[in-house]
Length: 614
Ligand SMILES: Cc1cc2nc3c(=O)[nH]c(=O)nc-3n(C[C@H](O)[C@H](O)[C@H](O)COP(=O)(O)OP(=O)(O)OC[C@H]3O[C@@H](n4cnc5c(N)ncnc54)[C@H](O)[C@@H]3O)c2cc1C
Image 1 (cartoon, rainbow, N blue to C red):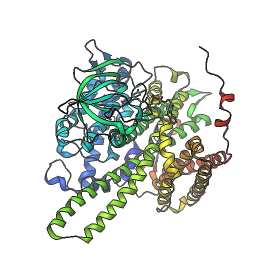
Image 2: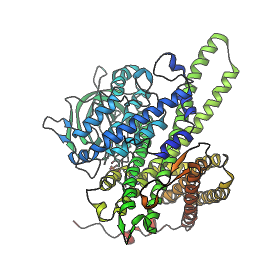
Image 3: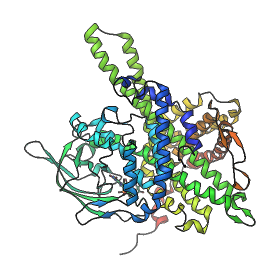
Image 4: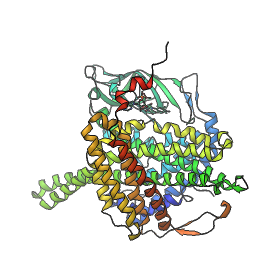
């Protein structure tokens, strides 16, 4: 039986290489839930076994059930019925039913709502696996962030009303933010939220481009303060799909055909406020979107993996000039670059997920400590040991929050751009056949295209990440990575990374001298440099792993496995190739930034020419 978890050496390796046990201890709050819920693990080993088992069964479901339906789902799409309801493609309905039966619709939600309480890292692995099978299905499977937002910020009553149904797979949701005049700039959202005399809230207005807008539970960003412009006039609301929620159209789009993209008209729709007024965008949607960005990063890695595999298999069998095309330098170089880029994206994404887990874990511990200390102080006066622990948790929590705020947009940006390149190269590796619908790579390329756009475009991710690169967060994070212990054979590579770090520092200093506009202009170059350095260290870490694992190598003519190699040896080769290639790229970007070229500002009118005449 095929299995998208078992057959992926890199995911299985990273599962063992990363400190999943440490994350489990944080998530399980030292395994205190096991006395209350029979399926909560009692120790680290049991937790790891649970994660492994769920990934195993999801891997099998993805390979055997979901993937074989993906092509039909893509062709069939969704239907907007006359009564305003939406019907998913048949395969989509069947796959969603299977996912609900597998009890994986509440990956990170607490046990008390029927969730699995898994770390984000394992959720990222799961999303990647599902996306490799069907990227469109992931858009509904991956909407679990809606339930997480309700869990994090809504009242207990709202949580009880919705969360059990989410984890049971009885309802799906939608994240309803975008409007015709408010896309990247969500501060200009206009959809009106108003209260009646009894304090009941209602929504009125239009939203567009809403994934699964036909879902049962809608989280809606709306203007609750009519006299207040900008983000502070916005609040977040939850409502059910009911007679006042009208799906006006389904978008006819390039890819992810299985995922309905809706325009919605809210006609005085009853709703409930989530958390506090005016914190809708600045706190709740930011948190929702940060989670969603990691999910799109995972979706991107899954699509890239699927596209790569089509190209890899084809290149082994397609003969031209009397040899398999994988023997030709240009083709084999492209294939290795695709594979390396996927592993780099995965390394960055999983590290980001781990950092988010640390952030959430410490924040939770802090909250719990302060509750306990509150009781303690009442019972027996002040406790200085407890205070010291709380201070440490607070510092750790802050540190991880800063790192997560930088790594999240970096991951979304890197993985989605990588996925587009890999999917296009996959078509290239197949030549004319790649352009035909006979092979899945054309679907993967169409599905890939959205990943750099939704949940914030690449440009917006760069805006978010570059602030952190220039404020010293990247430098601190890279320094922490550099201080870890590595195998002696990594020495020359670490030196190269050290040189690159100096180049990044001097580029940041130069950009700061030039001002904010220059920072925006060269933001991409700075973020690229930082990502390449981080990935370089992550690869060196993987090459210095203590995990004892052997992986198959390619056979001659790509026919069969020829032998095995230790994963650490393989990763050492990946690290060498990645760091060597990127060292010259980093040096080039440093030179480019240092030119001080501002022609984008000074010569725009001359270079661009006029807009088309009416
Ligand atoms: C298939 C699909 C599904 C979607 N699903 C959802 C959903 O479920 N919920 C939801 O709320 N929304 C959803 N969206 C909307 C999506 O999030 C927006 O399309 C996206 O944020 C971009 O907004 P926009 O389309 O208005 O483009 P614009 O904001 O108009 O951007 C146009 C261009 O300008 C650039 N740009 C804009 N501002 C800046 C800046 N400050 N700096 C640099 N460049 C900038 C952008 O990068 C882009 O290249 C979906 C969109 C699509 C296509």
